[in-house]
Figure 1 (cartoon, rainbow, N blue to C red):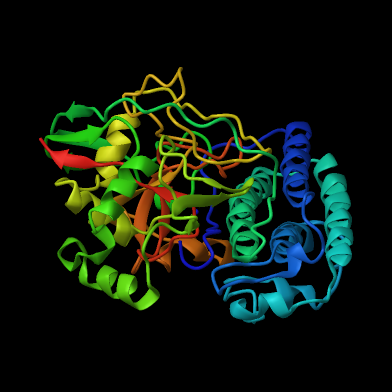
Figure 2: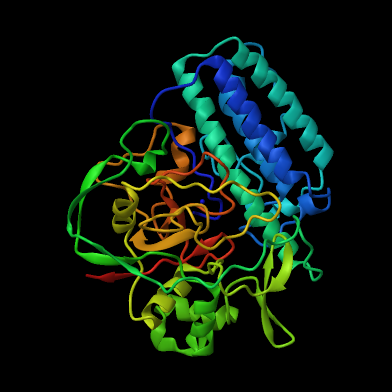
Length: 430
């Protein structure tokens, strides 16, 4: 889930839902956003701790503005915009729509209040329900489905961002309830042999996808091996203990500049307490659990760890080809403390923890597939124009909402980003 804001909108692929089911899905997705915001007070929802973080209140308003701007205003007869100022305050990167309030200053927006944003959501939701009840054509239905996936991206962002807000607070307050029991010791990492050859990559057009997931095309991969599970906290601690953050020979040049310039000594949210490593989670700060997947590492850190281990990161083609024939295991979203977990007993793989734990860095730069063309219009701005300086991640995370996971999903972030739920799967040449 990127550029500073990973909410990338594009046209949907595939069919549309009937009015009744579309209304139900709209209501369910919108309700889930409010469930995520419910544990937070008004003060929590206004804070912006860095440029990449947006306040919870802003997320709730922006995705409401999306439906108002792209669905209701142009398509619902007689609809009156809720507040003319909201278009300036809650636009993100839609150049075609107009000017925007600067992203780094979203935390200065004490007005409209959190309550005002709640009223805005209720008003737009009522208008959307009435509009959808009358039936819509396929093009509008596709636009609504796009908006729902856009909101699901912001649901993940909301959790990423509030974790940074609360994790920056010296009290390290909990967003949710207690962490689950400590993970058992993981089985030794195993390697899966993968053949070389021509593989079909990209979305096949059945159901929803963002435009950057296609066109489906053939790609050449060479024989290789993939790790059957993710790198754990305990394995990462061994990297630290061996001087991983002090050995320049392990790092890309820009990565070493980030280490030295920003003082990285461990993944984000790790800190020493009484000379022992602890990790901040949405359930609060806990002693580091060595059996859980390492999370909140940048591409630079993932690459350095792979070099230290004598291997590499996978390409996105290798990753997608490996999961193409395995069932999509999407763990249930747990609001009582979403955090990456060890492999589930029913996760037969071959790539265990492929989905629902951490987004996995690849060596692939985020560029268009052969034949890619950005979607036309304002809602097509988010993918194509960010195809520079980003690295692709695959899978999904413990913050990814239900129904928002696909084997072809191409997430992307700058290589220095650490505040998303990003982790590591290893690869090596066969």
